[in-house]
Image (cartoon, rainbow, N blue to C red; front, side, top):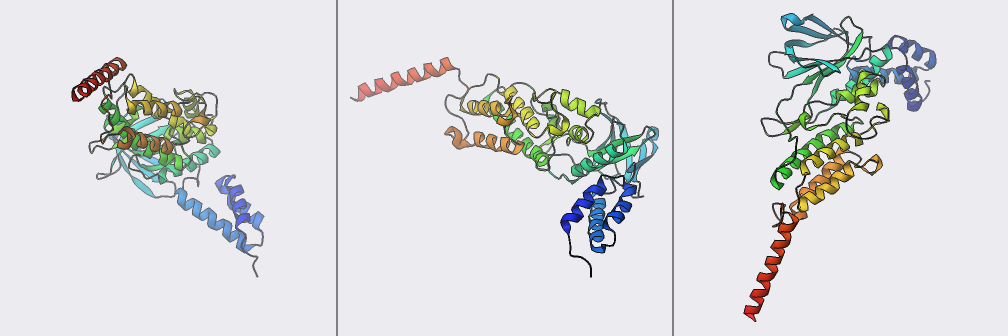
Length: 366
């Protein structure tokens, strides 16, 4: 009779097996499980499920093969297991951002425009496996505000293992870079930012961070929706390979004060919250009024030097912004009061005039 099911022990053996090279995992499982067929079956089931979910991302030294010639504007993308992902027709090389070599592509004649990004980080076998784990997390993301990751893994083009991502290409008009010109302009920007917060929250919910949230990376598309042009590749590679160029870039980028002093693994969603709060501060500038006052309080919390005092995720920040935009927050259906946007001197003059008029009317009625 086989021993009873022991899921905890199976989980432990599975975790230890994953710390070994793929070729050595089965031998390790055999040696640990011995004659316990039930335990072996439990561990093998976990391994099979993992391999299926990862879509072969961790089975070989390089998980994908790209064949063809870029100079004839066509390459074929296949997994090492033989599955054909599709044909990438190259529309041209995009600017190199220092971290990724990027090509504009169309995966098939009817497929969505995409960007083929090759990370400029040479990977060891273990690093390639860790990038695969993070890549699989990005493959699972499904949110209208985020570009879809169509395929991800590692590939060897003769330079050693490199991480690659095939990502939906998003085009549109960037959000306002400078100060808002009016309360209405400010409100419009913040309404877009609420949608950005929802998209970034999808990353935070999965334990990921974006790491590069700026106005030029948040675009309004033709249908009027706002989307991020990237799903957080910088942070994914930086977290997987702490000594990579991506990790250095993540630490040295402008933004939250903890970036330069903490390792990539120690950073979290509050880095993104800081970036979002900085955008609000820029839009506010000298605008005054109840809405602006509330947004200044929110932005101050989002950009606190002590990250323990910030909103813990983009979702929390988005909820605070929704409350500020609510008509009830400003005693008017449009969220504005009579004195919104007026300078302090103009407000005082208006109040004094109102008082004089009120006094005069009172005397006449008496």
